[in-house]
Length: 318
Image (cartoon, helix red, strand yellow):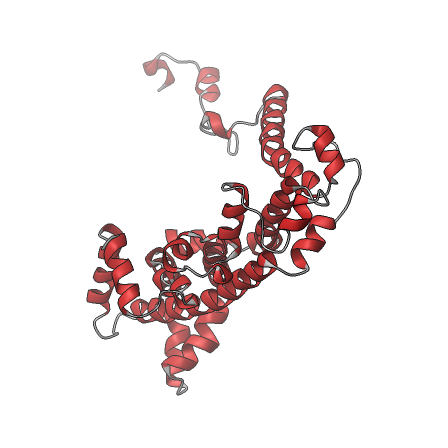
């Protein structure tokens, strides 16, 4: 046979691949192990990105902790701290407009997040059950609201007709439900093993017990992520207060910060101290910004570990 094919036996053996010696297919460029120069470039780029994010935050924090004399000598924002003082924070949290606004923001965030999560979880669980009454029509209606909205004027007229203006409910109800969050929760609930739900029904469990004893404990990751989304939304919201509230005592912290930073207004209760030179207006502004950023910065690391599982599992598999 080798004579007919015109090949020698040694050539025939060289063409036979030994087991385990097959070469792996070439990998894409982005999957190749980077060189030392590439790793150094990535480290430098990541360091510059972190510096661009942290440096402005450093300036805000340092300036809020400086005395009026240090700020005047620096000509404004302070980069290198000198005299550390917490006078600005003590005055802000000692009473007055800023403290009241902070309490309003905390209350609206806590109550609004609980209400939004209750509505979203119940809606998502009902839509995740294929046999629920009218779930397809309800789902199509919710999807339609993501593409078509009534607009600002009809929304304002509705809030006014319901008598919600100059009430804290105006800060919660107009933005209480996010269709995107409901869809993420629904997709996660649909991925829960149906055998668990069926076995619970066989044991006599109703829908409420299935939801609270089986579905929600298995969905802690996505619930934590969606709760953070709602909480950040309520804490950072300022538009509803600007159009639905006229009483300055009811304004949340974000609206007070806008008045202090953009409009250069003096906070109620601190104007006399600023005019006499005891406090720096810039230090007050920076301190209010730190107070507005602090809750999100503190809560985010605790929920960070749930982001991958909560978002990808709920959005991709569904």
